[in-house]
Image (cartoon, rainbow, N blue to C red; front, side, top):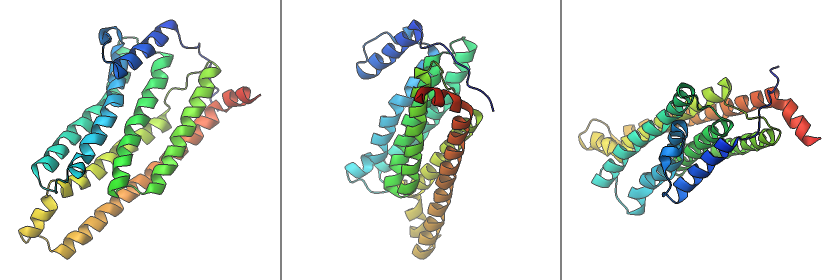
Length: 248
């Protein structure tokens, strides 16, 4: 077992960076040049989450049918937005190491931004039927429990950084999101209807294909649940001593 390595509480620099992140996000009037580059990338994921949510549901809110300009445009915006948002998860770590910006704040802010983004995207897929509600609830329980453990560890002076299991879980979250988004794009852009109208597929064949695609999506999200709890148990195993000390 790898014992938890205590680290100092948040430094004044980390606290200052945290204040800047909050102010810039809610008020948008502070000088972001004072923020660490790595934390700017992390903050982007927090901002991208509600934007993705709004764009995803916009066609439904204005009753725009599949294959319409609005529906196609929304999908064309969702894909690059999600790609860039997911890439920032690599960029923040890369620049943190490159510019020697690794901090306790960053170790907590990064997983928070990941959860914030992925739960927002998962919510979209639950409403669209690509992700079972039970999978979403189980992942929600896991992520809240993980954040609770991080808070306990931080109070004990230990910043829990992402472990390999957690990173693998996040990668599978990303893959599952793009699988579900690809299926949504197949319908939203009107490609599915176009195949039927041109006689390439019959209605029955299209229905069967969509059932298969939904099952594929279901399988990915089931594995998301499995990997999320496996990584959670890994955190509990390796940082259990911190939690025991906090409960005394």
